Length: 385
Ligand code: SF4
Image (cartoon, rainbow, N blue to C red; front, side, top):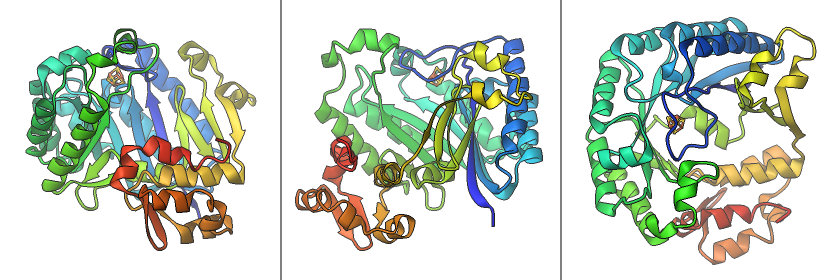
C-alpha cells in the first residue's frame, strides 16, 4: 500500500513586500515568474521519481502569493503533479490568494484545474491597519475577491487574520472578526503578529514593544477570537486555526500529525524517508540548477538531517499538542514501541499538576492555561533543553 504524502509548492513572488514579512518572497516581472515555473516543472518531474511508493493526499500552493502567476502557469504545475505523482482523487488542493491578484476568470481557471480550496490573506478589516502592515489591498478589495471566489464556485475558503498589530485595539480586532464571520468562510486562521528580524517592522518595533498591544491585550484578543468564531460554528482545532466541522485544513493537520511532505520550489522544506531537508533559497542559484543532472539533488537539497527516534518523539509531542484533540498515548506506543508516560515521566505529571495539560485517556492535551504559555509547555518536550 502506498504511503500518504503532502506536497508543498512554493511560489516566491508578491506584488509588493509587506512590512512585517520575512517569508521567501519578492516582486518579479512576468518573465521572471514564468521562468521560475519552467524550472519548478522540471523539479517536480525530477523529485517525483523518488516518491513512487507514495500517494499524494494534499497539495498546497503557498508563498509568496501564488495567485500572481498566470492561470496557465498554475495549470501547468498541477498537470505536472498529476502526470508525475499518484494524486488521490479526493486530494485537498489549496492555493493562497491575495485580494486584488485574481479576477473571476483566473479563479474559474483555478477551479477548473482541480484546486478545491482557497486561502485568502486578509489580516484585518480595518483599512488603517492594512495600510500600516503595507498590504496591497483594502477591506473593500477583499470583499470583492471573496465574492468572486464564491461566484467562481469555491465551497472551501480560508481567511487569514492577524492580531496584536501596532495600534490595534480589542474593539477593532472584534470588529474584524465579526465582519469576517458574517461572510461564512469555512475556515479562519488567526495568528498574532510576530516581529521578525530583517523586516522594516523589526527596525521600528523591536526596541519599542510599548507601541504594540501588551501581552495581556494579546491574550484578550486570542480569547475574543475563540469566543466570536465558536459562536459562529468555527471550532478551534489547533492553537490558531478554526473550522466548520469537517473543514479543517487537511494539509496542516497532516503536518501536525507527522505525515511526510515534499517541498518543491525555492527554499521549500521537506520531511521524507526519515530525513528533513530544505531547498536552495537563493533564486538565482535555484534557477541555475540543471534538474536533469545526476547531481542536481546535491545542489538543490540543503541542511539534510536524519531524524533520530528522539527527534521524532519530540516532534510528535511538539506538533501534536498544537491540536486541540491533543496527542494519543496509544499512537505514541504504536509509533515508538514505548509508553509516553515512561518516556516523558519527568515532564507530564508536573504539567498535569500545574493544570497546563489535561488527560482524557489515551489523549493528553493543552488546557487553556497551557495554550496561554504554549511556548514554555511545548519546550518541555525537548530532550536537550
Ligand atoms: S503577501 Fe504574504 S508573502 Fe507576500 S509580502 Fe505580504 S505577507 Fe509576505
